[in-house]
Amino acid sequence: MRAALSLALLAAGAAHAQLRIEITDRNIQPLPIAIVPFGWDGEVPAPFDVATVVAADLGNSGRFAPLPVTDMMSRPTDTAQVNFADWRLLRVDFLVVGRMRESGADRTEIVFQLINVSSGQELLAFRLTSPNSDLRAASHRIADMVFEELTGIPGVFGTQIAYVSVITRPDGTKRYRLIVSDADGERASVIADSPQPIMSPAWSPDGRRLAYVSFEGDEREDAIYVQTLRTGNRERVAARPNSVNGAPSFSPDGRTLVLTQSPDGHSDIFTLDLTTPGAMPRRITTSDRIDTEGVFSPDGRFIYFTSDRSGNPQIYRVPNAPNAQAERVTREGSNSRPRVSPDGRQLAVVNGEGGSFRIGLVDVATGTMRILTRGSLDESPSFAPNGAQIIYAAKRNGRDVLATVTTDGFIRADIRAVEGEVREPVWGPYPRP
Image (cartoon, rainbow, N blue to C red; front, side, top):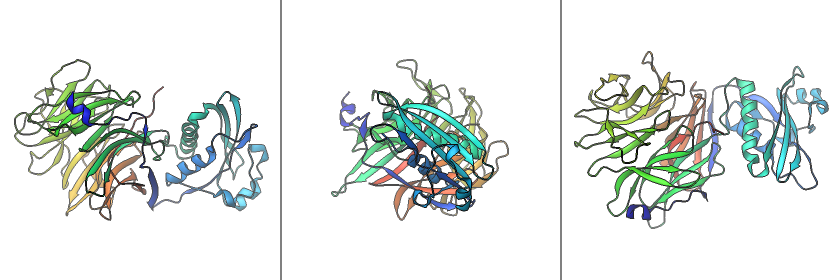
């Protein structure tokens, strides 16, 4: 296929652009915690610094204030070695200690404990073994366990995000890259690289595929692709001529895409069966206005979408069936780009009012909305798989960056690219075995 030749696919290519997380606003008191450097039992240097990654994860969440290693009065590696008076003097509430040892060829065993300094109680004790090549993922897992034990919220440090990086060259031309990285921006890989725009990435529920829109070939027409991350193999699944082909999103079982097409000159919502080769999209809405940005509810029964059929953009919901009646969900200001929380009870939307566009959180049952962000051009929201955090795109001093906000609105952070600008983030699901 000629169009495919213009796109460089680098399923395992290392991305130059990495991300830096900076807490910008925090309306809660972070918990003082110390992540003591883990001990190492081995004849060669430790293969990885687990404690540093755990501390960075917890600090980047905004809910914890890790004690700098240079301020530690001692470095215990198990509960029996802890001098609780020292840590109380340092006003540390919780302590993580641990040891690592070789457990076979290129494998490491990690044993760690989470301790309440005030009571001396051991809250969590765990042993895990990991290949040396995967110790960063093991570190994220430890951070997830500590986070959930102390907050009651499942951690998302072990998940991934996808986003589009845009690099402007000295001659003014742009390069578009679809990148997948850990939630902290590390281990970034370029999934697709093109001189033409790439947009609207969407994860499959199992985290093994990405759907996205790409403009390729001499015609530079938009088409929807589904790409398998492990192999780099991809398939062009929707490319209707003389039509929009955009805004793909997977069904909860991963077998269907909801997408936008415009065969009649105006955009409507369609679904596409990915399990049947050559299947044609099935029309869901028929309107003489713009219907776009469809997304399934977690149970697959409904599709939420953006439509201007009321005069300005609003969110509507329609049963996942042809010719069904749509109902309006939002009414405050203008609203677009709906994304459904994992439990189906809330929508993250782009709310426009007074010339600004911010991320709002809509209660599906009541229709009430809370505005979570404070920027002037915030867009592309995506829920973390725990439903407690949203990643979105924002403008900072004229540059495209990513940002996060907790759904309670208490913690905000900016995520900036070391190189270029970043946009259209989407948070991946929890990894499956």
